[in-house]
Image (cartoon, rainbow, N blue to C red; front, side, top):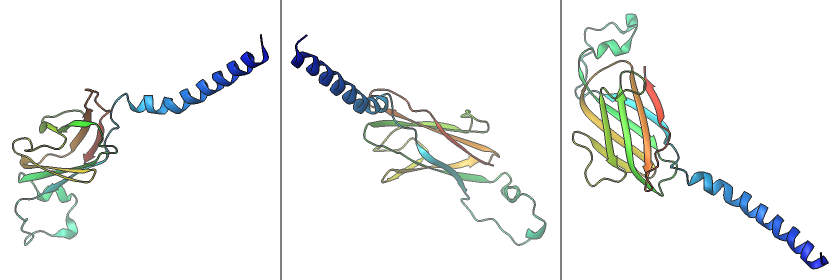
Length: 161
């Protein structure tokens, strides 16, 4: 084999190897959207509680104060990359993976949020409010993103004790 051809094959093989290594991480990212990060759930009371007759020194569980009061669930999560995000799936449940409190599917930047909810996006942070719900303890939140190709991310989960 001529000297030039042998070196060309080695150079071409090395160039092909290096380019495939450089492209490999991009191919992995193309498999679906990155899951949301820093998911959090909070409760907000539509009306303040009266603390007049409560002895806070003996209070074991502060959630006991809420009782059967209706609450607003405030959900927050960050989207690591918003480039190809098409829609968001949110589940609220009394057990991990359930949506017995509520399940919501909405466009990433909706013109109008799902009925009975409010939606706000600031940068990569999404806030979804679900008002007027019965208080449950514990509450589990699960959030997944769907990209424009239909790929769904692994869910990001958290809970409120």
